[in-house]
Length: 226
Image (cartoon, rainbow, N blue to C red; front, side, top):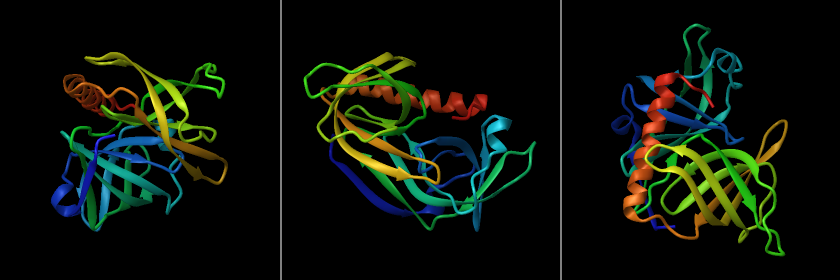
């Protein structure tokens, strides 16, 4: 994966009203919304179905938040405080003092909750049956997804993401670089980070980034929760 640089910035200088935001919990489940108010707390207008909204997180639940701009992502950690009752769908989370700017020189990772399929290669070289899972983020050189079980570093995996605008179905072979455990009250899941064996060409990557931004906007505008 391309070398990544990061720098810290004041949150008040980066976060803006009506800015799309992605929140990912320890299970790898991702939620989307718009920043509605910035103050002592961060007020987020959530876009999700009523049945998902009523199952609000517990106070203190930690989320990794991301706001994405072209070729750059700002990330910060925050904690859930409270939510409003329906029909208004608003979450209150802690306002960070700082955000971290992360930008790869050639490959920007875009947070995007999408269904996908993976197939792992066994030690004998054959491919196991495909499994349905969820994408965490994607770039021109790498991919991250959720797994129910541990995956060893160095494992080969085929990945497929369907119906990407401008791209169609993305199919690639990748190599596992990290397997990070997330323990919750009910189960443990893993976030699997991989490098693509063949990096996308710059033109293909630009199409992919535009496709993911387009999907992010569509999710938010249509009110889909993941």
